[in-house]
Structure formats: C-alpha cells, structure tokens
Length: 111
Image 1 (cartoon, rainbow, N blue to C red):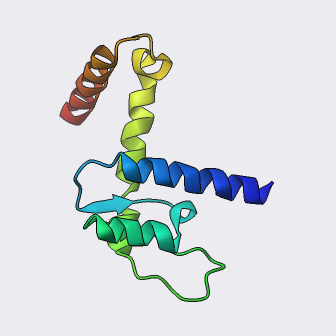
Image 2: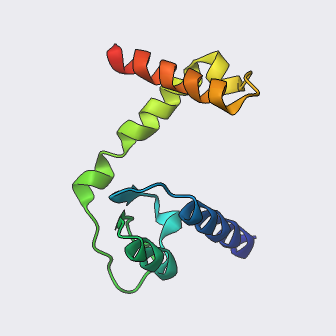
C-alpha cells in the first residue's frame, strides 16, 4: 500500500513538473521530497522549498520562513471552497470556471 502511494505521489510530481509555468520557487510538502524532483526543478531554474522526509539520512536545506508562510495559500484555497460555485464546479467551460476563481479570489483579497 505504501509503495503504491509513493508511486502515485511521484507520478503526480512528474506531471506537475511538466506543466509548471515559469516560477522562482516551488513550495511543497514532504511528500514531494525526492532527489530527482529537486534535480528537475534545479534544471528549470526553480528553487525548491521542500523539507526533507524524516527518514532521510542527509538533512535538506530549505527556507523555513517561506515554508511556514505557505499556509496562507492553503487558507486562500479553503476560503475559495466556501464559495459553492467554485467548490462544486458548476461551470463546464474552463474559461468561465477560471474567471469565477479569479472573481472569488479578488473579493476575498479585498476583504
């Protein structure tokens, strides 16, 4: 079971890596801690802010202050889910769905 979970995380990481827009940093949980993932991020000139797994023998350097502040992103997505239209994805057209997310994020930022 655990090996299947790890396999899914790494497949998700590979899919994420292929579709990343230009960025300076990538904030991620310990589940994305893999040497190949960090190396691919480095090749794309993206700095990884991923803490090392507890079972890792060699400690990994990461920006602890930036990692602690990533909860703001999670809180924003939690608030977006409070908007029923965004949470249930009534819009079938991706452009309309993205505009609903942008509108909700703007209103939440305003308040």
